Image (tube, rainbow, N blue to C red; front, side):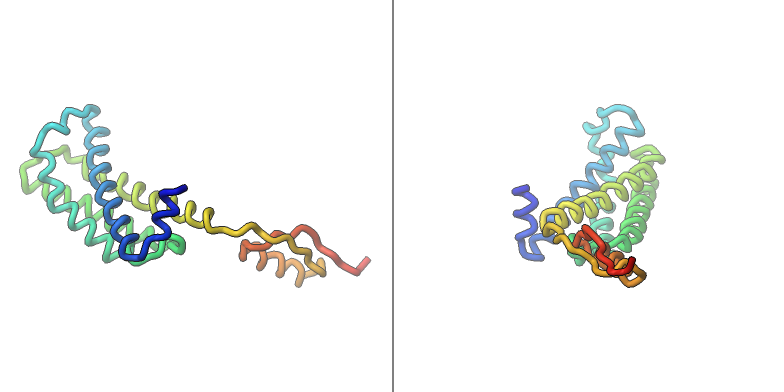
Length: 178
């Protein structure tokens, strides 16, 4: 909780920098995990040549995430529309990895960019929506109990509106009709 509270209290430029750093860690982690899943071993970490693939991939991915609006959006208010941008950037990042791999003479298996793209999409979108859920849960006020007078159509419409609002909990309907 303390780390999330600290991050929420930072100014926007610091929050953007934190998100950017997390994305760099995610990109590196997704590459390593994709390699490990494909090769079913970890000894590739000692081969310096495989890391050349990430040279162009890392900045292009970060620039793509910036163009997609990931560093503009406030985490608490991020919507599902951002998923399309994350998907496009993840696919472009995988395509760049594939092209760089071809240019450098097949340093990594051909399936790694595909695995990497899927992992990158899941990790980046999961991080954003996970943080949104945590931030919303930490800043949410407890719901206020209310009673609706009228059990007809207007009462049901009010119930739907209050449920969408989220700040009110309907505990009863009161109606004067028999």
